[in-house]
Amino acid sequence: MEVINENILFGIRAVQEAILAGKEVDKVIAKKGLAGPLFAELQQLCKQRNIRIQYTTPDVLDRITTGNHQGVVAQMSKIQRMGLDEVIRVMREDPKPALLLLLDGVTDVRNFGAIVRTAHCAGVQAIIVPAKGSAPINGESIKTSAGALLHVPICTTGNTYTAVKMLQSNGVQIVCVTEHGADDYYDVDLSKPTLLIMGSEDKGISNQLLKLADAKAKIPMEGNIESLNVSVAAGILLFEAKRQRS
Image 1: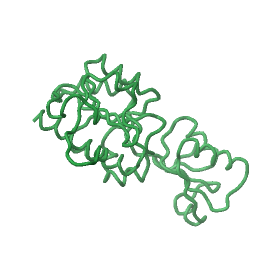
Image 2 (image 1 turned 135 degrees about the vertical axis):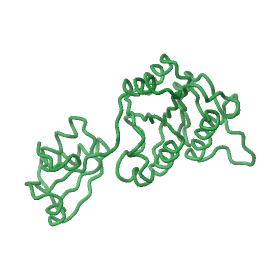
Image 3 (image 1 turned 120 degrees about the horizontal axis):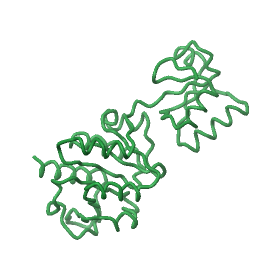
Image 4 (image 1 turned 180 degrees about the vertical axis):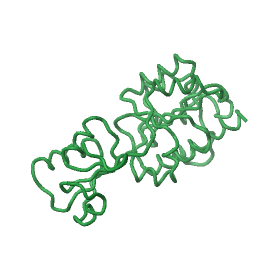
């Protein structure tokens, strides 16, 4: 596997192997009109892993690398990744009470980016997202987060229920933010170690995660609109947590 620098990888097979090995690929840049069974396999793999392929001319690829790129270059992600065990370790070592965020089914990249930007400003230590059914974590999400995604560690999990249970067993209270909550958000104690869970605007938080909640917080509203944009709701809760901790 040949690498020009820590963020560039080239060659069809090398890129394919990196993706299969679980490396974080921001996007793949391929020569227009590239064909063949090996590239077809790579296209299918990128589709399965939600990795964008950008098509361009050979001279652009030649400017990226002088190596034998075979018409394919991958930009590796610069985003910080953190396993759940590491999240717990960092949480224990930090003298401040943990403030974590889990996004359950937030698929819109603009909402995701806006939430990450707010989370960074509010002091969130890590954002947990499901491996499937979440907004893609790539260059576009970095842009919509105004670069905050390069500073807030992302923890991707294949089982959000298990992740929440593990955090709960390590002394983190679980606060689900839902319009059906029993308590107004400012009446919930957010000064202690807390995982805030935000759901998608259309489906909300899954029933499985709602059952784990130590508190269900709602944002009191007037008018005829049932709910706020998820990024706005996240901002309200995160800065309430910051206010309570200051």
